[in-house]
Amino acid sequence: MIIKPKFRDFICVTAHPEGCKENVLEQINYAEKCKSPNRFKKVLIIGASTGYGLSSRIVSAFGYKASTIGIVFEKQASRNRTATAGWYNTAAFEEKALEKGYYSRTINGDAFSKEIKQKTINLIKKDLGKVDLVIYSIASPRRKDPATGKTYYSFLKPVGKAYKNKTVNFHTFEVSNIEIQPATDDEINQTVNVMGGQDWKLWIDELVEADVLSKGATTIAYSYMGPEITYPIYRQGTIGKAKEDLEEASLQLDNKLKPINGKAFVSVNKALVTQSSSAIPVVPLYVSVLDKVMKQKGIDESCIEQIDRLFSKINKDDFELDEANRIRLDDMEMREDVQEEVRDIWNKITTENIKELTNIESFRKDFFKLFGFEHKNINYEKDTHAEVNITNIIE
Image (cartoon, rainbow, N blue to C red; front, side, top):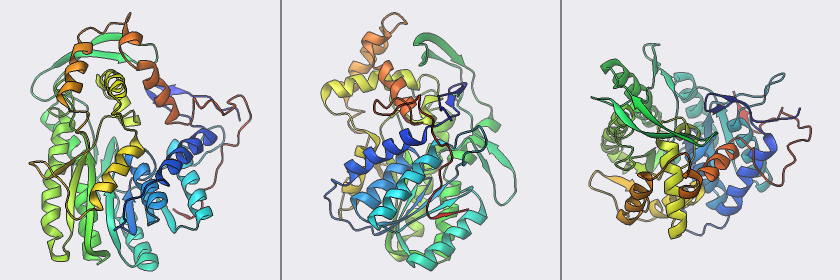
């Protein structure tokens, strides 16, 4: 099969197995240079196939030689369809972990379901006994409540009033104005049900009840805040309401874990090119400006670099938190000098000057790389086997 990128709206519906493998190997090569002491030896990553979740699994295994169990929800190739990028990422990870002799198992299924939670508990009991770190990194457009069977959907909308600002089509580089109408109460509640802390709490409740968390176990969920430019659509919007719920969940879980001297945190990470962020209006334009500013200042971090810094923090006995008990990995993004330059550029951007003022071309290239495309050393005209098996997968 000759595999080319194909799109539905702003979502790429194909993926290239060799390119995805290249992405994973690049991160592994970086992670193997990590030198921090390791206090986490058995790690569960819920949402381990892309983005920060994948990087967390790579740093755990190849940086700190920890045993890992990854929960993913991905699709194998079928007929004329490629597998998902997350499937290829996981296959590449498992192949390399097996080669290195690291314990690694992947469970493929809906992490929101009771079934997958129970499968995970059974596997932990059988192979690891207990885990000492649980990373929660799920980004999903919908969630089926395991108790009621009702399916909730997430909405990317402002709250209270309409939002107007610039946005960009990162395929055509056309800058335009966008107006998004405010969410209804039902849309806010649904988004909180999908992207808030409810499922994270269910996971920890189940793991505590099953007694598969070690003494001193830590759990971390990933979040984002963003700058004033994106506040109405992000932090003050429906997603922000969900993130507030996630942060409240961290306080509840921190209290729940006290009997085993455990801890729960939210890590606020920097803006990156991800499948999720690419679909949010305004955000791709902001990220393309931010990328240019931070790279010029020499302070930009990739996904794997962010997670390496996170692990360097949490492997210490004491590390700094903000006033809301959050780990802040967005500290360099939110520096006043960075945001001042971003705002200055933002006010000047037009379709005519976007390539000059921003890194929009890099944004588009990084987006394609998420799906295994745009690697210089891969021949995309060559026939490629789309069907790739995953070692140590449980379905």
